[in-house]
Image: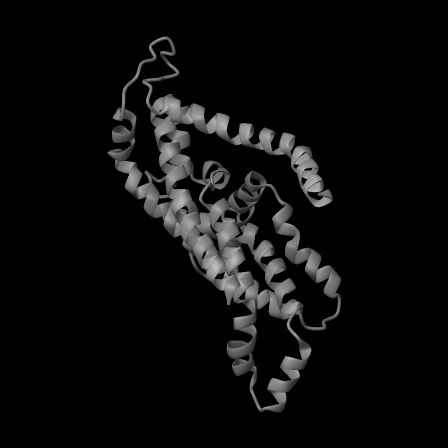
Amino acid sequence: MATQQTRTLARAMIAPSVGLLLIWMIVPLAMTLWFSFQNYNLLNPANVGFTGLFNYRFFYTDPAFFQSIYNTLVLVGGVLLITVIGGVLIALLLDQEIWGQGLVRIMVISPFFVMPPVAALVWKNMIMHPGYGVLADINRSLGFQPVDWFAQYPLFSIIIIVAWQWLPFSTLILLTALQSLDGEQKEAAEMDGAGVWSRFIYLVVPHLSRAITVVILIQTIFLLGVYAEILVTTNGGPGYASTNIAFLIYRTALLGYDVGGASAGGIIAVILANIVAFFLMRAVGKNLDK
């Protein structure tokens, strides 16, 4: 009886928070869904009318739509590849006893606390600028011509910037998982004659598999909405070369003043994100059940 009363009291106490959270999520989603079926343009807000699936057809037939989907997948895949591989390597390095280990760890995680627009400005004006950037100076010192990264390799440049921001996150998660590896297993593997590579493949990687899956899941959810880095550096160009689905929605809404079309794009993005999250959650569940 007491247990039932405790459960009832606990549910009653968390009900306001859950209700507020649902309102916070459902109301904007419902408004976006409603606007996606309306002919609503900011230049003519008085002329609002029901258009059915016209906005969805308009957004789907936009020449930039499939390009933005491709760019989004390349962006997410490229960042995950860099952050997972780089995170494992840095975690292995930080797991060793080195001088100034605490200071090194602080320096490694510091990019994660830099706001995305600030990080993009630093990379654009101080590192990748073709005139006075660090990389341009290095190229000139080696006898090469400076590279205009954002004009010649726009999507790759954004991948580098976003990966630089998310690398500390994956490093922290993987380092925590690596430090939970039983030292006796390492000693037993060494006593059995396993080399460094064999211990890494057959001992470290299986132990990090769950952490890697969690890193991929969390980062994918956030990377699908990358926006600030594109706005600050390339503005989606040249053409649509660096436009992802989030930036295409922004361009439709605030540059084309088409709230209805942008809302339809937002609903499409939510559906795609949920499909990706569904498969990732299944992968996480299978991994955690092992």
